[in-house]
Picture: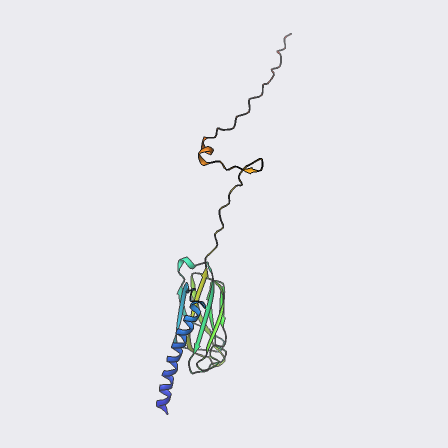
Length: 197
């Protein structure tokens, strides 16, 4: 019986690893396989954390690539449970002032939980677990970020002058060769006659 449990435990860890790989691939690519993640993180399936119920424990942290800092990204967190059940354990993905929470990730043996949301990336991303009432977490997961590059507004241009309803755009050479506008002639000032007497 002990031997069966040992093999069963190894089998479940292997199954979780496969689930993580499949879930990570599914989250990383769109239905047509055209949207690879800009940034990814993984929590090993063998991760174990214990503590007081309701406490939050850091599982992993990663620096965000410099070109993604400040971008708005779609975050997809996939949590995979092994054979144990630890109700109300939540995975929390956080960066800057935003976060995505995958709730109750160990509700069923061998289960997988997916959560997604929008995150504005700061300089780091953390993945933590909030422990449920039994104070234990044992599982793993992956997080993928697909980011939308900031939109640069097009340059503003001045409207072309119109002559008789027809737009006229002068060439750069004509603009350089155009004479300066004439200066106003100085106004004559009448001098007051001198007073003698």
